Image (cartoon, rainbow, N blue to C red; front, side, top):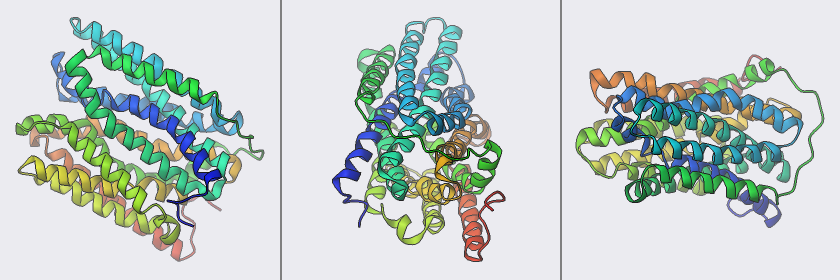
Length: 399
């Protein structure tokens, strides 16, 4: 049966649960295209602008494993609700930062605090919603849940980025925080109406054991995520350096092609296997990033952003299926949480590290670095696929 036409008892619960993740990432996307320029307007440079984006992922990295374990032990609904409440608080703090823009040091400190809060909220909602949806529909629908969750995630970012630019232009920076507050409040109220799922009993593996099982797939994911991190963090400044307008449309193009790829090729992972899909996906992603690097005009950069979205679309679910199958159901949340940490690490270091190339090679260079990382992910997936074909485990801890 196609993932695009699931029976109502499966499709309904998945859609309802991942909608909560949509609301969370809508709140994340609203300030995304505005933050770099706002930080520059406070008098700081591109490295600090990159830090303002990436510090959110540092917080997500620190909290994601614990979110997964909490989802395994007390249930995913609780952790999802806590995350949505975190979005409301982050919005209030961001509003305060905007009101204090005349005091750059204080405004930046409060802005970074808002980003940290949003990072914790992201980990709780994302991990909780996926675990919740799998619990409601069964582990055989893992690929579908992860795919639909990604559609919600990047669809929200695609809508949120241009909306945030419009809100900032018409109502001011503080209004972005008000919007985030409203989205989080609505989501947390909605989550109370959804049914709980039973906590799965069984031995809880130590974090180190689960980590070693998901490590190879996580490394492939981290390398593949550099492209999205580079696009989200630097596309606004890249466009400004070229004298181009409407940088938010590059993020929207990424999001649209990402969603279309997951809808059209939703069942590819079940048919061909996670590693084979990841190999093709990261190859396409690298091509898109190279096009942005070489783009002489905005139209070609938009095409590159679209190819990047097509390539990155299936990387997370493809490698997630390979990672989660290495643990028991009682450790599913922990495995998903630790696997997702590799995205957080990637996005957390992409801003400041890749930003170092800007001073010597310009903003375009970040996309060349991201393309090289995507090709490295391709090489790793090829190696893991060959090991699987030879009958070897995918990780040192999978025996």
